Image (cartoon, rainbow, N blue to C red; front, side, top):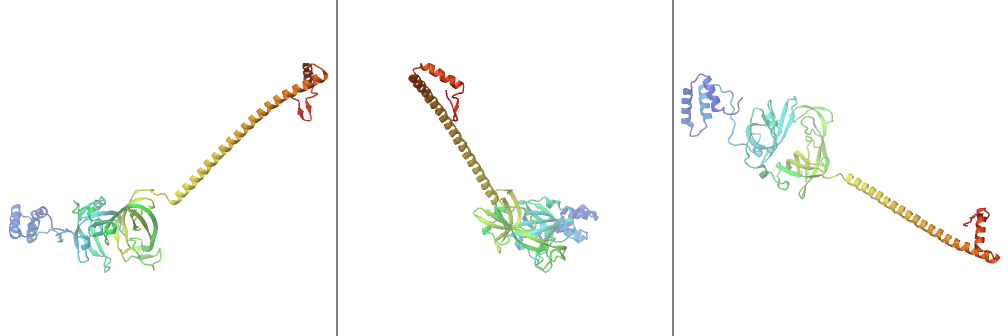
Length: 394
């Protein structure tokens, strides 16, 4: 099934295959151009009219309005198929309930954000898209799903036209700061995560992860009213992070689809939708630029404790060194004192010996040298060596 008017060359070849000559085709196209060229200058339409009037089968052509691409905030359930020019924010590869590959394309323009789901074989061209690409995509099917839910779903198939083109407006020109953002607008937050905690939990579909209400039992098999798949009731938990960006703190809600891991103390780059009701950013994608900018509080405490222990250890070493130095000095002082005392004893001993010798020699009128020699002989014979624990110094 073709979704747009076939190009001139394609229709021309089908007319040739139907048995018409080149001259016949060009003559017929010239007549149509003369009739409607003033109003419809595009020759794709001229030859299309010729083929249709001649009954040549061009396949099932569905006419699509391509006057202009639709803005996201203009899309309603009354539309059927549209063209869109949008920025790519996130490309996610998913599996359908039947196990086939699909792409979840999060897109944005200056009016808001939306999701286009891509199905069918040959979706590799979508996998190669990256954030910041400005694309023209056609056709995009608009449908209400689930039925009567009032929710708009956008889908496209791998055979649709996809072009990366020059943007009409730079993305920086329409992404407001958080404080100026309105409901559903794309916002960009870059900063340091100062807190991460579990904010809320719910029981949801194991396929689409949408909430099934509080009355469901975890592990129970159900048919999801949103995606229509057979699923298991699963408990999901969403994390909330506080990001300091500039002078402000921005609360960002992480969906269970985002496996970001531990973000505390990391510099992050976040793209998301602003929620006026909750005054927060619902995260579409998060990139970690740098980790461990901030160490956990405990590590600072442990570090302080460690430093205190080291300080005490160093202090004790210094005290011991002082003690050893003091004791060494004391020993040295005592040694000097002992040396001095011995020196003095020897000095007084010499005087004593002299006075003894002098006294004996004077009393008995004996030559001092004879007396000294006699005393020395007696000491050598140990007669005066020991007495009452005293060792003679003679």
